[in-house]
Each structure stands twice: as structure tokens, then as C-alpha cells.
Length: 369
Image (cartoon, rainbow, N blue to C red; front, top):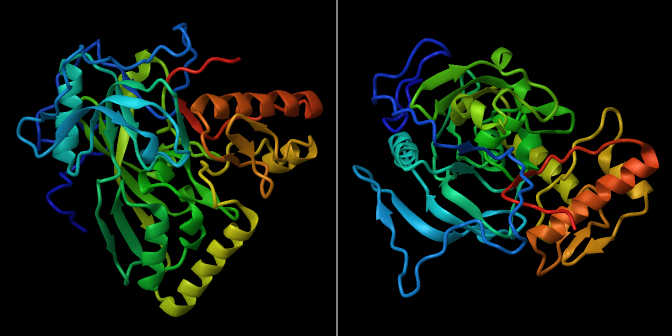
């Protein structure tokens, strides 16, 4: 299937760059920061990471040359994350086309600015002090196509995975019902191998297209991505030396099962959602599961057995309904949530000699109290 003109041709890994656009100039000064980055810095607590405008000057939006994109300064990110916390982006852009995405990378690269990718904001914790450099929001990269004969679904990275689950059911395609309660995008699901009820993205992925910071467009297949539990080769690198290797998912194709009865599939999908609503809290802001399950143990069970259900720090609380959820009960800060995560890790390790690894990604600077 051929995608719209917003999705230019791509190459298999190692086969060279796309001819649709010259490669972006390489720069040793640009830092490409992904959602997996966690940093504990040395700046004074409370000092903002983002630059402040001069007195009497209001920062003005900048139009990216040759695009319809506006780069906006000092954009609050609280409403763009499911935790509803976090500081502002120093600079922010929301491309709707691959060409605009490439132009955004180039703009930041020529200025030596770090780049942070933001999808649905459903699995991350942004520091109260904000994000320096350029935040590139990918949630407006939208496109989807369902082939009722082959069962294949191709969609852009910004499409919500839950929305695709409903659409697949409406087209009589089964195999994505489990994703209906996952509050993220298709791109995020591919990168972190999202899953539920014993199923995961890697099980149904045909291929995924990526864009590197140097402008290279590539196609990857599941056997190239080193998929494991909630992880893949595409997951964020944290070292600056690895920056050139970081790739942004732009679209993916999934293999679903054709020939299903839409009414029955919609009913099955509804059941999946109802089951999650019964067992998991959705009435307050959260990021979903905070920790990965360590081996055969369930993180939520371990936390519950330590007696931490309902424990709170500031406005952040461990959910009563599911102990692997942290809720923003009103007025929580990113630091409240960070301190609560650390407290859970310490308590579980003391009681069970097990280390809980966060599934939530942390961006910016955090300091232990």
C-alpha cells in the first residue's frame, strides 16, 4: 500500500538515505534526547532548566521556513501529559508532516539545541523545571488505513493506539482488542512494546518506519528490533555518544486477522475496556503502570503486600484500586511523584530484595529529597 505524500519513501536499514530530501547537516553539538532519558543534575532545586525571557520582552513564535509549523517559546506541558504535571518547554513545535518533522530537527540542529520527543505524554514524567531546547510533539502525525482483505493496518505514529483498536473492530479486524485501554500512540506502542492480557505489539508488528536526526528514513522488521518485555532496540538511548543512532517512529504496519464480525469484535473490545476500568483507576490523572513486573512477580502485588496502598507524598498517591498506579489527587508536582516512586522502590527492595524498574520515563532534572 502506498501512503500519502506526507509519508515519503523510506529505505531498509543500511541501504542509504531517502532521495526525497537532502540529509540534515550533522552536528556534534546537537543533543537528541529521547523519552528514556533520566537525569539527576547538580543545579539548585527550583532553578528552572528553561531559559527565561529578558525583562520587558515577550518571546515570540517563529515560523519554520518552508513549512506551516510555528515554533513556540515557553509552552506549558502540563496539559500534554497524562500525569498533568511538569514544567514548560523552552521551545515547542507540533509537526503534521514528515517534511515538517525533518525541518524541526534541522532547525534545532543548526542551533545546537537538544531535542526531546513528546508523543501522547502517557508514559512519562516531566520535571517541574521544564525541558530545555526544542520539544517536538508527534501526536499530530495522523494517518490510518485498514485492509479488510489482508488484515493489515498501517497508521502514523501519532494515532492513539486505543482509537486504532476501535477502528480495527469496526473493520472486522481482530487482534488489537487488548490495546483499547492503553493511553498512548502507535509510535509509543512500537517503541516500548506495549501490551496487555499476555499480548504485545511485537506479536503483530509487520514493519515500522523511522526517521533519524540526520534525515535518514528506514524500514525495520520485528526481528531487527530486539523486542523484550516492554522494550525494544528503538527505546531511548541516554548517552550523547549514541545520539546519532536514535530513531523516531513515523508509522507502523500491524498484521490483524480479517473476516471478523464487527458487532462481535466491538463487544469484545468493550469487554476488554470494562475489565480494565474495574481493576484499574481511571478517575484521576496517572501514567498507567509505573513499574515493570520483575520476572514472574507482579509489581502491583509486591507494592500492595508492603502495605503501601494509599500512601501519599504531597498530591501524589498510590492508588487503592491498583498499587502499580500513582495518582495525581490534585495539586501534585512532578517532584511529589518522583519522590513517591523512589519510596516505593526502597520499600519493596527492603521487603522483597527485588528492584522495581520504572516503566514511566523521566525527562529533565530530578533530585532525591
